[in-house]
Length: 183
Image (cartoon, rainbow, N blue to C red; front, side, top):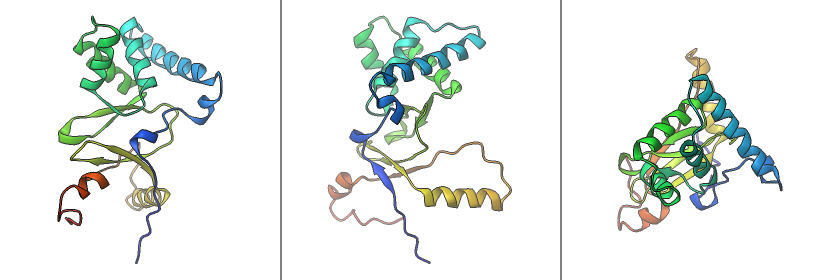
């Protein structure tokens, strides 16, 4: 049986971070406001406040054009607010994850990166172990295979994260004799 994978891929530079409705004039601020309000309500239920620093962290993630690692995010935030602490960034990321607004994406050498996932369509990742490039892709066929496996095993799936680690086209080509490596 031949499997034909027809992936829709978006290289990192072309990642669409905002849902289609938020790309219309005037809608981006409304979309960001909704995310901010979701986070504010989440914090309020835990007797926490949406501080200026937490708001700045969320805003930076909403404006990001790529997946950000903790150190990358911290460096961007330090330029905006030199008083912000690394621990504040770390704790806020954990709160955003618990709220369901941010997801971890595995990256090179075990360093995690983060992406805003609010209102974004489900997608999976291919991660280059050489340069750290993250390529997002969607595969309806892969989703159907997963759904069938869940049904067959009578498993109640809550969520999933699919990450493929390997070498991107640029890095595979830069390693003579290794582009055709097989497992």
